[in-house]
Length: 128
Image 1 (cartoon, rainbow, N blue to C red):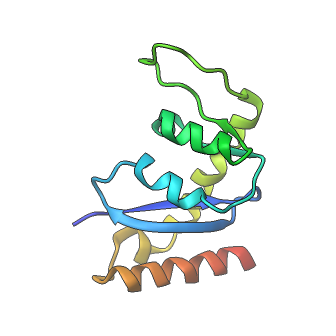
Image 2 (cartoon, rainbow, N blue to C red; image 1 turned 180 degrees about the vertical axis):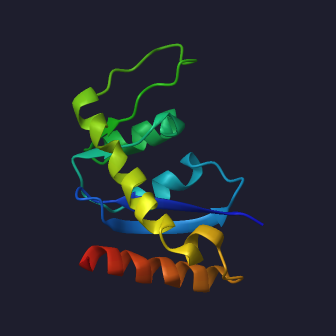
Image 3 (cartoon, rainbow, N blue to C red; image 1 turned 135 degrees about the vertical axis):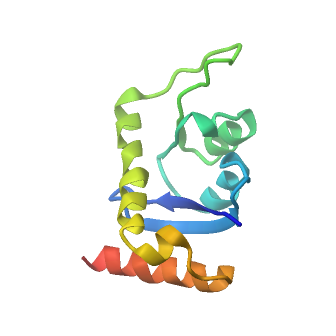
């Protein structure tokens, strides 16, 4: 059994929202739910999030989608390469999470306990 953590971080790299899914669930399936209701100027993501419904949802909220187009797109979109450099904030947050062995190896059998420990670690990282 594998678990995937889908997360949204704010501008300073602190965890804002997350959800847990099965390991085989694609990232883009959870993105719209996670960013709904968050007021922001830009949503930054990697090529896995390049889907027309998600891009349309982001632009409807008044934010700009800073997501590079996949190479197999027929019509390439432009994106802000300067803001895309900030995508590493999510990677750095996950690196901080992986320092906690209990998260890296998923000792907890119940998703609710695993999610609670993620919240605890996110609070600890925020305070540090």
